[in-house]
Length: 296
Image 1: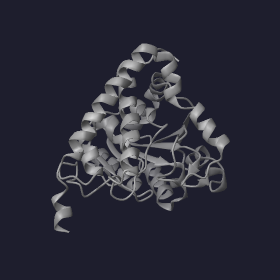
Image 2 (image 1 turned 60 degrees about the vertical axis):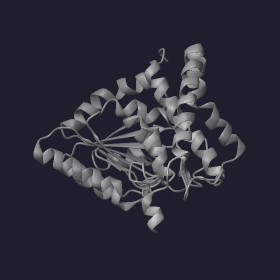
Image 3 (image 1 turned 90 degrees about the vertical axis):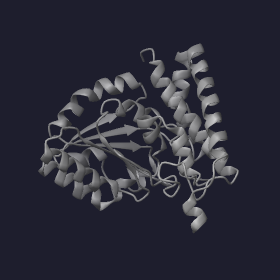
């Protein structure tokens, strides 16, 4: 691995600290509903989104890192998750349903995929350039709408980039128990290029994807599968993985890899982000709840 760019390290750490603080707030009863963190997967949106700054992004239930990598707005996101009026969607979308021009997340499995294709079609027809980027997990490959979308994307040569965060388990079901064949094989069935990324070196990821992503812009849809790990449970306490699996996930954590290489710079960056997110948490907790909640 090359020496990490400090800006990338700061962004990954910001997401890591945000998610850790969110779990603390959840445990303290401050988070309405549920929440899904991306601990262990933070490097993926940081690596990918810099390649597609003009993309319309379609995220999923585990989307905090996607939003923060794009906008660096922990205050707006936390306010939304905690149901505050100053949140991105005035506190009514919560953790899973976030909208901002150029960004949409949904907790409904696979539902953002056809919308991403529709926006990609619109871009193509209007000749505006750019592309649609949708994030899915390995579990979403059990949804029929994903295959309908891949079919249309291939037939109509849509500028659609699908990023698969394959952490090997869909809620509590190991992927091997629910997914026949491979994701690459399924993409190939539609004549769509598939790239497998197994590593957390942000610079190496961008180098590997730069050429293929350029081809997406010219109408060649692409599926990029990241072999990754989530460190925490699916959402709350629903982690059925055994100790060996959890230990393997911890050993593969980008944090451990970058911490060894970053030494003093990494430590200083983490301290800055912890202080920053602590300030954000204090500010958001002091906000008024959403007026929509008051009127309910």
